[in-house]
Image (tube, rainbow, N blue to C red; front, side):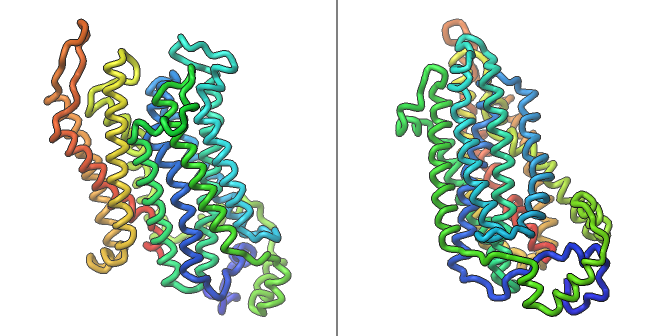
Length: 442
């Protein structure tokens, strides 16, 4: 929005003019410090995506109901981020506009992760029987922790991106670099998280995590979350201690900017609009190209959702032929598939990281960011379609053995496993471009 034409703005735009960003951008070093928080956030997300769908089934939640728990992500993203963005824009805390929300989000993530990791132990403490398949009290603790975790992650991510925009100032190059660094550190967090999820002996570092109510798989999940908390709190503390925001106040900003005084004066005469009204009012202002962009983005993430939710579960069930419910051999095969899926997600993250750093070069090579974004959506559709063929190849090539009178499937051939892992890796390219979608509208 151009500040030199206040007379052309509607009363809605005048009233909701966001507080201005600092005129002098921070150094790249400090931008990197803030962007690095994404590694801590994404470490936890990686653990969620790779390990939690199998974990909820071990607690006794039926496979078909697992997706309902994951509804928290889209719901919290739709509600929490706009609300927090609204209030962080107008926060007058002496610690700054974004830093209080980032610190609170990190603390909530740590709390939620402890609840999730110790759900089985707390459920047993509250009366769950070890002999029953469905552990109702553990499920309640898990669901509470999971919803808190998704809300807290959104509470972290929105203000973190806003702080990056603030400290980049009006420097377009630094803004694009901030987006690229944020996406790169997301990839770093993914690599660390998926690597931790694919390593089956991590629980040995923390022997106390294995209990009567928590088997080796559960103990490994706990250990992964301990590392997640440590990484997130360390990176957040470094960033918030090195990057200081000046307290914002409308009076101070109006006093220092004559153009802003004119805008705020006109806004004071406008009718007060409630927050929900502002959101719908903003939607009415959108032009047709933006609606098309939003519709395609919506379909894009609808396509991503089943893959991100069931990717490791797909590896365990469809590719490896295991099951989360059954005899020990079938369960062991399922867990092997889950860990192989985590390895695939790590490869996905490696490619995501390299693509994030080179997305501007790729965009110039294909003729612009818009064309690149369109091409990767077709790549996404192709890769998701190929999962059907991989499943069919896995079924047709599956071999079985008999152990103590029980027919047990063998792990898939190397070619099928390589095909599945290749799909995981290739999907890192569209995920990287989708994560830097703000470049499309710049």
